[in-house]
Image 1 (tube, rainbow, N blue to C red):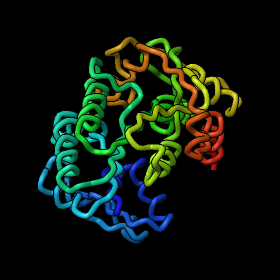
Image 2: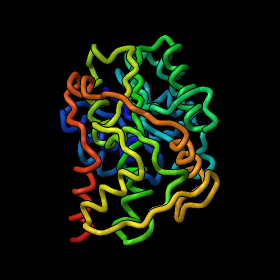
Image 3: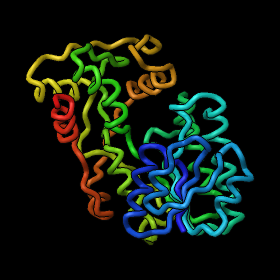
Image 4: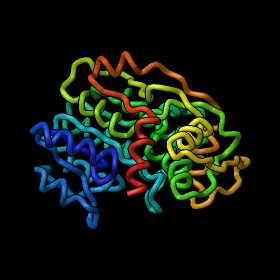
Length: 288
């Protein structure tokens, strides 16, 4: 039995659906009021619980062989915070998994994760990865770069498609290996019952390193028109984006990330999505 934590989110939902489609026995940790019924219709077993409630985690882990976890607090409001979810919540999940004798935990961290990072989310991701690796459990840490269908969608695609100005933090020239969340899901699914994934840190990026400016240029080519753009200093406002997102965007402007994911993609059977292909898929949808 596989437990998916974060199954009502975009990434976790993709993973749960993919595992169910393979005929796997999938349990999903859900909260009252969340939209989990479509996953139940696909054959997933729902169990009520919360990362902030250790007793519920102990019940959810009973009889579980593998945990795949993607839950984050960034898009939520208190009492879901980095402290209660990414730190205390995951510490409780690791303890529950160890007590229940879970065989394998697949944790979705972040490529920018660093215990020394001034960005609380990045530091928490790294701390939890370290806690898992020191737990005595068999582990896999997936470390994806920024998701194109989240960060490029918010900062570039939405305003470009709506004819608005693209506003990013900083100069917009730092490059990252933006990766599609469905490709990260494919890696997670491929790690289940895979000896090659055991006790392994797996960095994941898209096929090319690009900047926010490069992404704007991509949409200009596809749309056939200029897209106005400008940068703001760290701490400056970006229309429609909350402070927690601005903090992350400031972090992206502090470094470049480059990695060759092609060998890992070939090893785990994942076809990586380019920003160009993703953007081309958005434009007809927006025009229809």
